[in-house]
Amino acid sequence: MINHFFLFILIIFSYELFIFLKLRNIILENISTYKKILIAFTSQEHDDFKEKQIFFFSKKLFISSIKILFFFFLLTLISLFFYYINNDFLKFLLELNTIIEIIIIFLIYSYFRKKKWKTTI
Image (cartoon, rainbow, N blue to C red):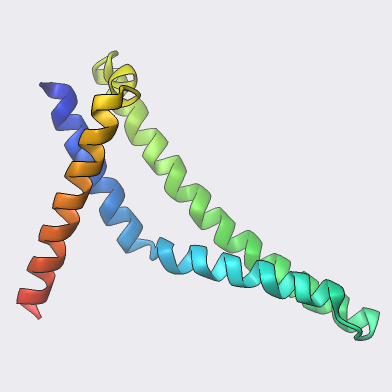
């Protein structure tokens, strides 16, 4: 029973952290930056300009990738904390029933959160 409670907290924490860090925008920005880097490599412009452009895009890509890694690091840290409290938690997370439960809880929570958000505005 405590595994389910930990799972619920982990899902809510990950969802809220995803929203707080604006991770969706960061991922879309990463994809856009990859495309810009590819275009910069194939452009016919002067090498000095291409070098500055690629350096700028690489810096931008590095910062956004650090933010994504920070998100996964926090999720891993929380999971390990729950594992420290209950040693069966990681095994519980990897079961098929739990994966289905994660999806269901995530969908229900996101539905209610969006519904609540619309009513408060």
